[in-house]
Image (cartoon, rainbow, N blue to C red; front, top):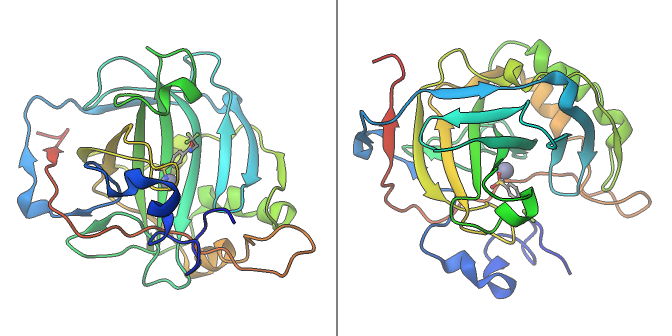
Amino acid sequence: MSWGYKPNNGPQKWVENFPIADGVRQSPIDIVPGQASYDAGLKPLDLKYDPSTCLDILNNGHSVQVTFADDTDSSRLTDGPISGLYRLKQFHFHWGASDDKGSEHTVAGTKYPAELHLVHWNTKYASFSEAASKPDGLAVVGVFLKIGGENPNLQKLLDAFDTIKSKGKQTSFANFDPSTLLPGCLDYWTYDGSLTTPPLYESVTWIVCKEPITASSGQMAKFRTLLFSADGAAPDCMKTARVKNEDELLSKWCSSSS
Ligand SMILES: NS(=O)(=O)c1ccc(C(=O)NCC(F)(F)F)cc1
Ligand SMILES: [Zn+2]
């Protein structure tokens, strides 16, 4: 039985096979803006993405993921809270069964309907897999989705969902620019945390954007048509999101405007 989001294999059970679930820097957390400390030493994020590095879109059974060619530095993250250069590997989403929940991080207890994660790895290591388990191996940019107007950039992804409805399906997906999914303002909170799904490696510098992007309720409903289950198996609608115990956040807050 592999990990998932059901009562018998979900977040409360992950510690049985992944004891680091009880670790010291587990994500997600509740971000409490009033308790975050401002750090004037933090730089604005520098994100540069090359749409020609976009490869394919995949239903991996616990999210929908868009994967990028990471053999060059052309899609990368620098500055912000990190040192060095981190290459974009993939982005994916977490969402809920209804519009009132779904994000993994919360802001003073507020849940958003979904959360986008842009996953980057530190090029001081030879590959993503080598970086994935190192304390400074990964940097994930998180962007909240809130219900609002139709998002035409998000729609390009949703239009591909019908061909990757069940687990394991993937299809080519070219020339998508992930920066079209970023908010206008890139102010962020940052803290040292972990992967939010098994193996829960404590290898992530989290960079959570303060400003959400929008998706319509209909667009959120499209995420929920994706299935956890493989072709032929009993259909099991995908709803993701791990919500960890509410603990203090020792975060730093950057305002690139100041
Ligand atoms: N939801 S998250 O924290 O952005 C997140 C990002 C990446 C992975 C991932 O690549 N797991 C596979 C690995 F690396 F071999 F462990 C898991 C979770
Ligand atoms: Zn994620």
